[in-house]
Length: 397
Image (cartoon, one colour):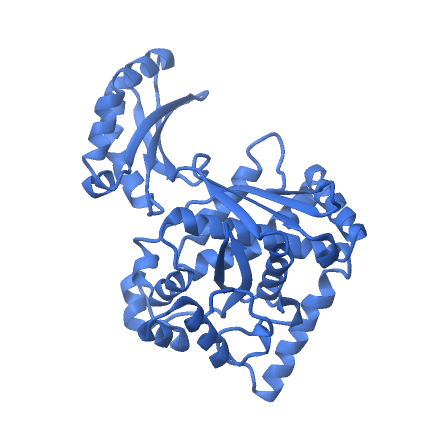
């Protein structure tokens, strides 16, 4: 099996779904057993956090139909909310007709911030710091020779002058790591140097989750007939425009994006809070809080969707290394870099948002959502709910 387009995927039993996933991805027998168990032992949890006593399982499912940059993916999603996985699968099916999702990323540059207070002459401090830029960067890169050997490491400095502080931004290429540990170590290392040069005191030495240099941009064309006609296209465009003028709507609009993103970020052992903070602060970086997606109608009457967000994720280190289910999920995806994972995440966010807007523009959000709640309740009555995915419906065929 080479295609993520699996008609009737939702009709399969959990075991049959897992069989299909293994066949698609070439998953090892060890990883298969990890997904079948789908829980952490207390011993595993104790290695990840302090004061561990157990784990809190969250349903894990796989969204089908995703075609991203010409490559098929079955996408792991960890979520407690019915309809999320089915909706993402359905939206991915709709845009497959026009070639799927196109995603691209910028360099994996993270920002380390050193806030210097008590600087009497900010212009002079800026001049001195920039004159020593090469020495500062060399000092940073002495902290992580492995990152430098892989082509990453500290690359540049930026300086921002605020009312009460001068802020040095250390720009670090984190390669396939999210990068928090590396960036924080570097920021702490150079803080004394910056204090000496500026005459100020380093009151903060930590990365920023507003990763404006580490972006993912995704776009797709959604076929008008698959959506339900040009009336639905027009309605989605209108709803999208409303989110640009109403912060209350924009908040819910972006939540629809994050339904998919957070589920995939969690399933791969990445930091959901960091990603969510980055996306929402990026949405509010201007004069108002705005939607992170936009939709328009093209000359053929089809719907064009676009997304742009910061995406700081990794495939090495942290829980992506220590959590066996996260590692198995990454193996199903078959990603070779953090940038590829970010491109998948952007595609999922765009499709998830489209699915929500489609429901709002046609039958309303509750019809499919509550149907899945009812399905779940009925399954609980009959005792048939089990396995990897309890949130599928006919929407994902």
